[in-house]
Length: 334
Ligand SMILES: C[S@@+](CC[C@H](N)C(=O)[O-])C[C@H]1O[C@@H](n2cnc3c(N)ncnc32)[C@H](O)[C@@H]1O
Image 1 (tube, rainbow, N blue to C red):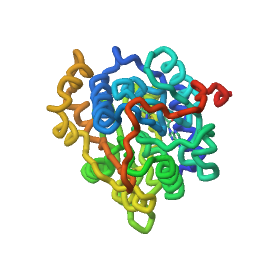
Image 2: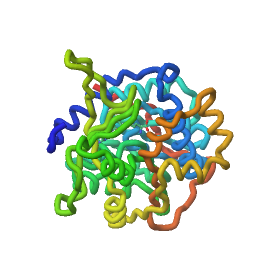
Image 3: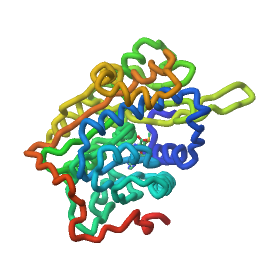
């Protein structure tokens, strides 16, 4: 990892990873309990904020792993956007194999593109405002610059109904920096499943709050282990620190108010009783060891609300009243 990774290299590295994700099967993954816990967190957010008849915009939707979670909320319509065409293709396949009871558009595009607007990415045939926007485990890729954050927030705010919410999950900057402060000169910390590597120990205000890079490796999910003659080398994926206090300040300019932000450990305490059954179902036969629980501590969840009065859609609403929605458009894939 170098000090300044140009956006294109960053995108390439990130892209490469997702394009060729090895996708270790959940059953054989050593961190499957963590994955299931992360999914429980997302299910909690979706259960708390998505309602029947909702239109949902999932920014950085990946392979559509959250699609089934919206079935239970009985939403009306889902749009998923992701940079990776491969991910979108897989999301389409997943969608077509499931009977979810709502229609979906799955589109490849950059949700923080500074040249083009979200409207030209989604290119809806109708002007639709969303009841809920989701951005899960992805803001750390978007925050390469303030300009990209602003474009992202502008897109979100433009597409969200007054009073609508944005739900998300993100690496917890405070925890990352706290751990960095205790790891000494190596600027590297982790456990048997993950590793984080910084290339500096302090982040002066004068250098700004965006594009602050660190390298991340998580077994079976992010980065690689490379076997070399000299020994094992970790191939880190570059990510950007998400200083939520800064995001919060800028988000206000786009009418978005932070209404909830909790580290996963605290979110667990907030919701473990209310969603106990769901947690049991999700975790099934596995439980998290201490090291996986320590990884959960690296993340936090957030909720923003757009100013204004929320008008809930009628329960039987359909996003495209009088409009012929095209199922899962194929023209977006080369
Ligand atoms: C860690 S994955 C999370 C996927 C999904 N949200 C989930 O929770 O399973 C991050 C995703 O963000 C996507 N991504 C990163 N930067 C993006 C951008 N600028 N625009 C759209 N998608 C992006 C990646 O392609 C990847 O699929």
